[in-house]
Amino acid sequence: MNCITYEMFGAAGDGVTNDMPAIIAAHEEANRLNLPVKTKEGAVYFIENRAATAVVKTCVDWTGSKFIIDDRDLEDIKKPVFSVPSCMEPVGLKLTSLTAGQDRIENPTGMELYVQVKNENHMDYIRKGPNQNNGTARQDCFVVLPDGSLTSPVSFDFEEITYCRAVPMDTPLTLRGGEFTTIANAAESRYNYHARNIEISRSYVEADGISHYVTGEEDHGAPYRGFISVTGCAHVRIHDCLFTAHKTYWTIGAANRPVPMGSYDINCGSAVDVKFERCTQTTDIMDRAYWGLIGSNFCRDMVLEDCEFSRFDAHMGVANCTIRRCRLGHQCLNAIGFGQFNIIDTEACGYAFVNLRDDYGCTWKGDMIIRNCVWNPLGDNRYIFNAHNDGTHDFGYTCYLPKNVVIEGFTVKGGCETLAVFNDWRGNPGGDVKYPMVKPEYVSIRDVSGADNVVLCPDGDLLKDTEFIK
Image 1 (cartoon, one colour):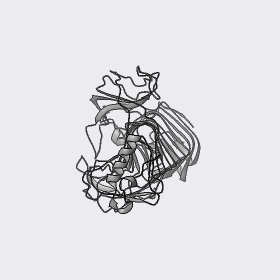
Image 2 (image 1 turned 90 degrees about the vertical axis):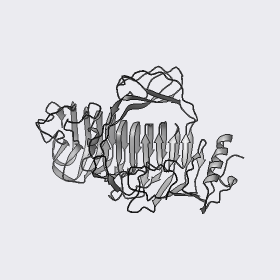
Image 3 (image 1 turned 135 degrees about the horizontal axis):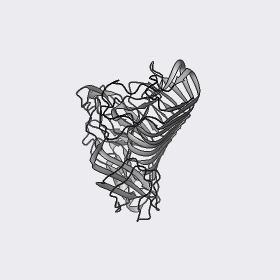
Image 4 (image 1 turned 90 degrees about the horizontal axis):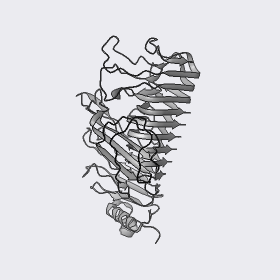
């Protein structure tokens, strides 16, 4: 016996019989024997709406088979369908403080580690606007090499560390193929995120050729956290996969005002070195009836290459990101975070080429590099970077506009008379600025097409001390 099948444990594969008990049992046996799982070509496995999770610890080949996931009237909205957890036990790592920019720590284990740290006595990302909140604990995640060096430096100062989790790396695991169709929930439209998904929390995982479709969406429903969710791990590669954006629903936000409600087919949280390659979506990236496909929080070293998504969004920050040869649709390219953001050979739609999220202070502490990109403007404004921070709100951290901006090759579709690198982000002229932003030091732009004139900012005095080369 060189693999385990679902049929060994009674799966019918007829698209009607509930096959989840057989799927769970098959993976339990595969985990016990350390054998891969292979599904039957042409089989259609039905997964009913009960609280049940298959734990995956060996490679899986779903190629040629289909899955129907019934999310109507769920027993438990938080239970993933497939969980891919780490097989490694956390190790003791004594960290009492960290400094922003630190690139080495003591690593007595001599192993490569995924590390997540928190200071629960300091709140960051204190959100402003209709979805306002009181923030979340200061946190960061990074990979520590055997010699103690970090693959990229710490983002925040940690005067104290109240939580530290360090996990050695797993052996590589592959999830391959399979066509999954979710029959969407019709629950109340409020922030009760559903997690009926493939939840990856193991390092060194490859997801290859997985397709996800959504059917049965009505005029209301609860949001999804992501059909593929990558959390608390490192070195995950997702390639040649097909996703589906969910309908946009409305709810009442924390400020007691109506807000559109995000629902994602991809979610990344506190993950390091996550790469998407040649992935796309079934729904039109310009169709406003559907929410943006991907959301991320607290991630580091993300890469998108040759992807076509309705948006990219670093929600509560990303440290270092590269977007290369991609097309991004109506929900734009949104980012806040740290380090270097590279946008290369990419076409993006939006009211600006890069939207620096104002609900988190429009902050990017680092450099922005844009090369050979095309912007398809959606509105009347012509700003490469859009930001709004009047200096009256405490987000939990000092807010920065990008320190250095280098733009080499930039095309504005439809043309314009004047293109500005930044908008008049300050607002509230003459008002009290209790939390000022740190302004850029250097901006360079050349080889611009579709604009008769390029300025740094419409308000010439706003960035008068920034070196501007064009």
